[in-house]
Image 1: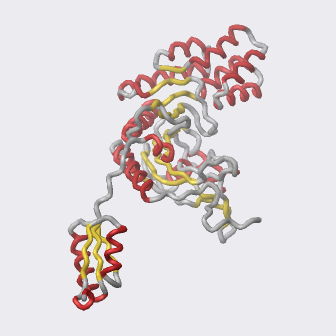
Image 2 (image 1 turned 135 degrees about the vertical axis):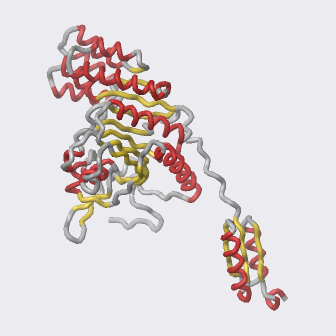
Length: 393
């Protein structure tokens, strides 16, 4: 096994330099200000969680987790997501807090990457969780807040696509008897492999009307007018109930005045197995990967002993950083106080006086005036030199 070079970092880890971090902190502050106005309180959970609690309940695959052993021999993981730890908190420390509960977070998560993947293993998220409300209005609140969050982040052009996992499930169950073929068609839809989807549909032994229904599914993407098309495509079952839910959701979103930033996507599905109803993804015009993902997950909290419906979303901060037009405020000018040994007390008192007045002050000891003058040439700013008489001679 070769030793890493002196400047290498673990696979998927990266440094965030001050200039980039200042922009990220400014973006986080804008999102925090937006989210808190909707009544959400910030929560922070540990970086390490027990695998047998959070790890096994998480939607992240076990082979994507960073696992360690603590001194007691328990397997712990670096948190692979924030939703599952929050479910743990709501079911334990918050067990007596009445629902609904509104929480948000801004933190890093960790997911192990293969060497050829080229993706970050540590990345930052801002997200919200609305726990204890099963109504369509709760789904509408989460989606509307996602819109306002992207506006607060000053994303120039974006759309949030909304679907319901039961629509595709129900439609395929109505038409395709083989569960393996159902799963294959769902995977094609998830991967946006519409060529593979169409080819598989053409090979099915089904009626021409059912074949038409499966092909029509690919065109059910647009504004509220698609609801009627989706309704006509279904029979009285799971898929039709999903359409009715989406119709009610769209009316609630119209009340928020955000539908210009939304579209309905009836073939939107998720590979996260804890979603139970409404799902949604946000996209920016100049970015191929989703900026945010979210949806309803009504079964997760039952794994921690406090069954409750829930919905929420997570913003992917690294991707948001690529498309935001927010610019961090320029750093305030610094005042540099250079001093020689005999003027230390006076220089440090002056520095503290200026800091209390709101200035940024950097102090530095110089052995000579020449050394001070060299520093002035190398670093822009307001420079002050305090020197003893004997040192300036």
